[in-house]
Image (cartoon, rainbow, N blue to C red; front, side, top):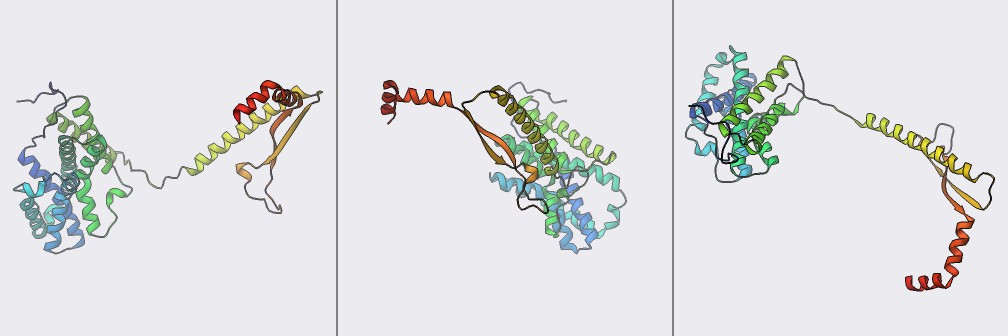
Length: 312
């Protein structure tokens, strides 16, 4: 029976019932990612088991420790820990079997990430967490296991390095899940399917077109160049306004112009052979004697004197 698409009773905040076989498969595939790294490092049996547990259960453990509702998945699930231990032992005894199907493992790996993202986002929604926390819990559940695995091995986590989209896919899937459940009233089952599809699609497109996450980004030179252009435009506009004002006072007496010396952003340091940086003379204020005399006359009047006493 196909579940309904739209919830008729508002946002569906009940826990998504992911089938046990699918949940166990996601945990097993997450454990395989840890076993593959253990094979590369030629670790012993304990290393295989620990990395398998981190890969399959690490993300959910981080999520449950953050939520703190006495609902730790790896402890409450009857098959989570035995599944990861079994995968670790199998990878230690038959390591060559895992290298025969690299493309299959890549597909199943990203599917498991999508399922972890949906499960983490759904659990955060069930506990009425805010949108930012929902996205964080979904992302951490999806990629937290791999991050712990790399940290335990003393490496920079792969999700922090420039590579094809992985953590970005988890973030997008979590956002899609939240928007569908809370704002579109889509049921949890359909939101899970769509969220997993988004994660898989973004990952495959990133691999197919070799789209890499940005790194070594420095916008300071471009921003500095734009600021200089804006400054020079404003400076030219100010000079033109000053010329226009001065033309109004040409041939007239009774005003005084005060100038100040000002340096531009490009000339903060003195050039070779100069004691000081070059400075530009700009208008600070214009004082008109008529206005000053009128102000003085008004202050000297009885009304002005009364106003001064009131202010004092």
